Image (cartoon, rainbow, N blue to C red; front, side, top):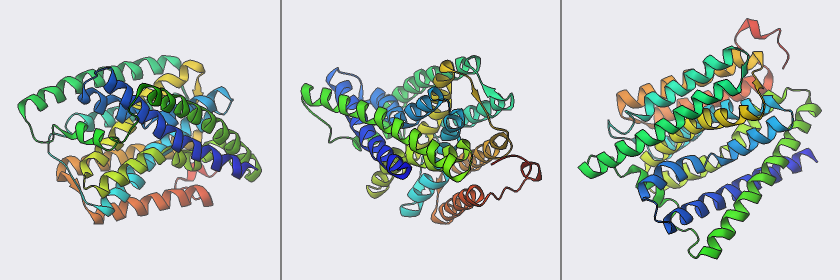
Length: 331
């Protein structure tokens, strides 16, 4: 029964997320919103709607381990699995300036989450600077991209290229409203089914809710980013896949962990703080550092990313954690 709920939840999240993003893009276009703003906000943050709804549902349902685990696990999966898979299909290349702003932001946001997590819980007070950081980043990135686009700088059209991946959306107002309604219902129901099934599986197999959140739930909520990355790689828009992942990790960290704590503080499990948080920070540093220095990611590094993700999942599945201090902590 729990497997059915998880499967149904994942399907509804994926389909609902697609409807929600395409409907929101179509509505923004109908309202005359700049394509650049749509590419930087609706597309970049809309694909993270499943993470937000699932973490919110989990926290309200009394499963904070899934709420924080979903974000940390999604950020890890976005880098190691989605970027790795995209680069394995088509090597990622980017212009030197395309990651100059977002790279330090995602590093800073990740470090901020680790810092707040070290206190033992993500509180509403921690959510304030995170949300403020997200708003500041969005406004600044829009102004910077508009200036680059006006100056004809290389890579200035990347947000518009990302928007092209969602061209086939609803056209008329009734179709747009229907897409938004179906998307919202799908995401809400999907998050509820997924959390119910995930909590049931955690109890049935005797593992922590945080472990389920870090693996199964995180992988499921990353499906929209995975689909977007595969389509972008197939169309040879490797820089779109890169931008989508970086934008998603920024929203997961600053947006999801900025909003959800207002509905209740999120305690950080000790094992997650000692292991998964540092894995997230480490892979983010390696990923951003490599991209900024090499201006791309080839198939060899992509294979290493995928292998690392396999090892990470194996550590959770078999209970193999390298730090001796973790051995005494409950799974």
